[in-house]
Length: 217
Length: 288
Ligand SMILES: [Zn+2]
Image (tube, chains in turn red, brown):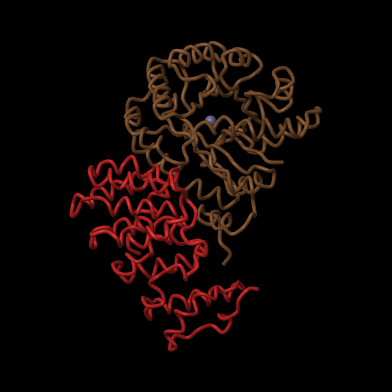
């Protein structure tokens, strides 16, 4: 995702009034970064909250895109950017926190925003967990935390197709964990989600319980 | 039957309650910020609680098909603890959030000077943030407390139709009816107010400007009292439309004054991919 791609996707998904509000808000933020604090919580009310792409229920929402563009408009770098971002996340409601997580790959923050990703992965809110495992986590999150995050998705019913890092970031250890998960589910007589298959398929040497491919109709 | 519980503390309730409420017809609710039973000792403790009211609890409610909104305030009981009053400084940023539809619960507990200050200051916050106010009436010395409450409301300049005075009974309803404020009634399993006495109040005062809630919390209380009241109304000869007014349209009208009530998917369920997509975004469990 780039700011231009977000702009394009927003056309038609928000109202004309919403677009005008966003333009004015970006101008205000570029002139005075502190203005973002009042504008950030209002984005959903002003521009809408529906999915940005109708087919992706765990993907970006309209308010995510609007908030990400506000953050991209911040004339801040380094510590100043990190401080503002952390404060917006800490004082945000669930939708604002989700937007900060989604916007991370658009911002020059390096590894500094990882504490926010870790915070979101500690929650049990599937919207936050899914957003935390976006492109930023794919490129910055360490292997152990990434694996635990993926496993949390499997346990909480977040479709693995929502994670851009899979199957490329899957390693043998993740495949072993998936296989063990499948064995537990099979032993309990419960269905094993089919979307762990692409991860297992990468590591044919990892033994897979026979019932893994079974899927509830 | 669709039910909106305008005052219930879900933080203290279980998922069984959410399931039973949905089965009884509850599709939306407002959770006011209040006391947790165990006194808080710092402002930080409030902030974690408020964060849950705009974060985790709406997510939990959505998993059971119920829309969750909240009200935010320093409650009157803890307004008396100087370690807690610092939280007043933090309220403005919460009052800017989407899910926050009123300032509350504010009002009196023991009618102290500290409560006077917190009550008046938070009514001003309601005016500034263009939000309605949910006012708790004291359980002890209620009639005098309601008089004093209404005087403070008048003095604040907030429009009476943007205020609900809650936990009323047969003795205190008239004062509030005459003030132009909304009348709130909490229906409990014992004491205070029950559904049959509520029906008698509705017969005398009509169905306008009245909110009926369960006020269920960590004490002995029943999250289905809204439904029991609806059933008692029908049994007493009120029409289904009367029930819909008291238990759905009235709370929608009162909290709708915030401009932040979001009921699209509960009012028009199953109308296509957008609504389903939205419900997933709000936390409804996806099929695995
Ligand atoms: Zn209460």
